[in-house]
Length: 324
Ligand code: ASP
Image (cartoon, rainbow, N blue to C red; front, top):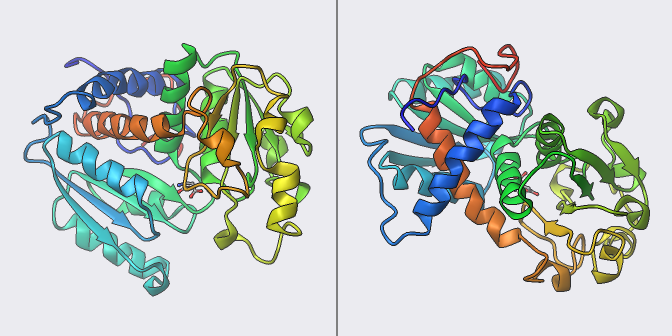
């Protein structure tokens, strides 16, 4: 493990991250999956290091996952929840960043409701920064944990047909997943009502479907997304019942996908709106609990790599968000 080369100072997004860097994270995560299944999960690699989780937007699984990841590696982990409504973007955000920076953390894990806010913080502090979700922009560790889940189940990412379904327009999870899956050679389609297709879908290079039967045809992976009403201005679909009827995943709609297609959801789930309990809890097809398990391992790998301070030239575009 000692000679792993990771070329990024921060993990701000999948954009700018090449296949080698992604594989490095996934490969290292594998060893942490094994560790997390043991009775004694504690390591001391990050002993003396400080990780601060700064969440300007609420979170249960991501914050807990980063906290566990840091603690299992032996770091001191502090959680700060900042009321988003008290934030005035600009100066206040940077003041917070400068205050935290003065405490000499080694890693800041930041979630923020505004796209680009985490990148802004990374430009002002001296430590490594991990984006734990910024607005509609990116959620890189979610895409990495999804990739690890798929890779462990199917054995590969390249060549798979992945259908990302639902509220793609407001989803940072979808954006990071599309970037990662394309980088690793998978094919991605999105299935959503026209009002929930992102404006830059063509730029993202995905095929767009408005019908679940067509969009799920021969899919290896069916990734459902939460309807993010908190990010919608006005109503973008007639009713929840109507939405479920046309876009909610149930056993009937799933028949269009490959017989062994895996079902994924980043959580939190709206049962009966974007996904039916029968498929969400199907122990043969749903990997939703496994996604949560992989999340801790992936975040351990990210914290580990970022605190090694080994910067080298990789195949990545280091000028972009994923790098620096
Ligand atoms: N937990 C994910 C996120 O923070 C997905 C969601 O909230 O729907 O983006």
